[in-house]
Image (cartoon, rainbow, N blue to C red; front, side, top):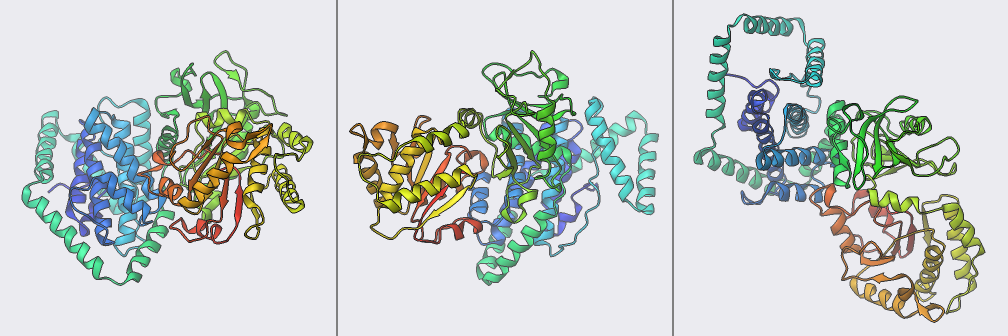
Length: 584
């Protein structure tokens, strides 16, 4: 009986997990698309087992994407585990529908699946300290590229470094035995092993019925279990996610996918400076290993032929906040080239306006310096580094380039407080305080006012000033419920501000009926329920609103306690108006 190299420990959960993982290992050398597809099936089965263990399984008609959507929305799986699930889902879809995926992609998928299996076993196998050993690479293909050979050799060295003497002796004996085989003997052995794996992988009606029965049984047990059992699962899941140790190739794959989800063309293995990749008109590209005077930048971001950003990519366990320093060195070391045009500047010693650092891990407030996408706008020395929850889009960075904060702050100071309606002294004082805080880089402000003291009129005056001074481009005004949304829309549409024109006539306004406002929309009114649905009930990060869709969010009295992430709950617990900028 052949054994899986990396998935044997999952037999205690379901033998089919071991079979699917082993099948992928066997097919890696000769048929990488099939190997990738089997790993997609592997991930889908794990997702169904998780759903059943939490009493959240529906039936076999539910798609993989739908299952992941609910697991993420209910916070059953941590966000970084969700990222791995979705990466396997997407490359698996490409493999089955388009026959895409080479050996490099298949090897990365195998490592992702192994990491996912380890997380699952630590969470649901009551083995928090489970040590799986080093990932064992599959048989190297005959036509392997130089890069693939190097990666496999690195993986082999890690195995040799981690195994004990007995395991090393067994491995060396197997290698010597295989080396002594004739070509005919090797082909016959591999063919026999493949037959075994194919027989195991054949999903008969009886096996499908067996899986369905197991899922139904797990579902019934979960429905009868006390709530604290699920709390413990969630705690163990978070702890196991924190222990995930993705290597550089896996991290780059996650970052590539995150960039693609936000409208950048990205593939570390094909879009590389060294293989001839260069920026081009009409394309938004993240080109890997771009040369600078301070070493190659892991990525350079181009909007058309304009260089707008450089990125430092680190492995998952690295402190990513500090990595901004290296990205800033790239910005200083950028050399003039006929391949691109500058976005402006230089700004002091910086030659690139935006610098980033990332390690592939989704943003977690409790691990802020080790997660998210860290960002700094180098155009002003007063701009601080900060964490974003996602990558900016090319459209968002283009818009940010249009904002001159110093000029906007000067325009606000010179702008008179004259509107088509009077302001009370405390309203003017509140607006001045908010604007001063913005000029000092404060990113969130609370304006507390009693009912009937003119919050909406204050908001109209403030937003008019911020937009007319070009301090912000797009603003989201969030209300507690639909009735208040219609009321707010009415006030913005009827209140005359200057020259006999209303706010809506000057800037444009989109109301509750416009889920996705057009690019020219300056102010969009939405309910907190609608915003929560768009952000939290997305299948994955590619469906959430872009992090730069709005430059400023105004939250007006949203205090009823909605299903938000654990950190956001506290921010909505007041009868208040909240100004936050930008929406990240």
